[in-house]
Image (cartoon, rainbow over all chains, first blue to last red; front, side, top):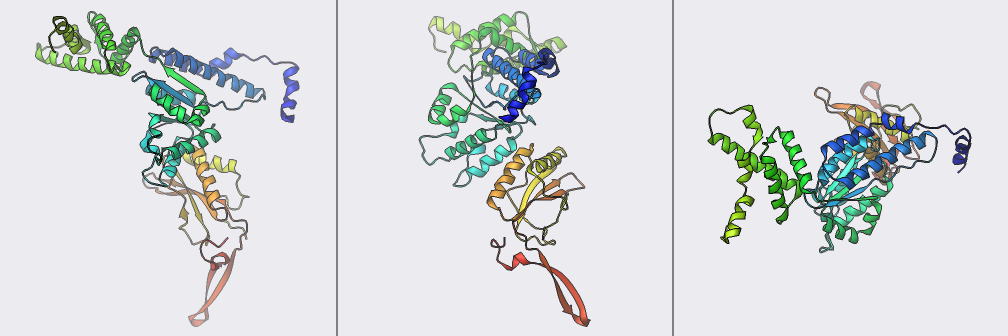
Length: 311
Length: 138
């Protein structure tokens, strides 16, 4: 308390005004956020949360410079959402972001699943979990499909032991590592309901929304660009139509389905090129054409459904 | 008698903050840090017990400090040291080793003289602590 009071006169008296803008430029927050905007399509709630966290860390740094109390905020997160909404991608990026914001010291990402944390016999789980935690310190621990940790149907399951150790470290060594749990929405909800302690220790529950057709198209453009492919002018609207049909079908997995569709289109493009003339240009090798997309099962099915035939 | 072995042994015991800084240095160099303990600190006893595995893929000193805390809780009255192993080709040996924990009472060593053939004398050091069985020494 006295330490706090010691600092008070400096604040009350000649208040030194701080240049928040300069501090913002000096930290590389803007670059990080721009990069995020550029490379990840959609995901508005996720981005705004990351922006909030970045601002908080920046303000905390300024507060510390003035001798104000700036405790490390709890940054444990849970990512929930449907398949293919970018949970794993963002988690991978998160380690890098938090490192550049100066929250974690080393910024390595340790991605684990149940197998890495839970042992097979009595006394095996605790050392295994501790080993993983030790490795993750100074960075981000990403637990994919975290709900597998807890198996209520087996009361002698060792997953609970792992959760307890995890809880202890999440609480006591907050400045040493950030834990991110990820999984599908409904199963994560059940998981958190049965482990209320875990849920309350996670400050940020972030939901990943499904993508719209336009966003999926933008994603496919990004994916193709990275692979050095592109759509022919006629193919792009067709691919959008494909996406709309695909979205209406069961087992649609957002960006993952897009990637699979593009991979299949690449296969068809390769066959088409081999079947065609011997001379191909650089342009040909890069372009996905109408035929490559038109050949999809979804387009073929539309016709049989009209005539009532079986596929 | 205060045991002096390894690096920094003539300095006062390192604080946790100092240990952390040393470990951070080792990790920055790419060395693997390991923790060892013993209750037989004879200077020629090169084989201390390992506490857990060498931490080859730990990236931050916090991991090592967690392990050290666990070791101190398990063996509060043992000698504990931190080793840093350099695995680069051609080196493959310890680069740094220092004591980070010691028992509250250190009885020390006595010098033993043994007469051998031709009135020659052989000298050896004997640790008072090892007169008692393992596990009850400190």
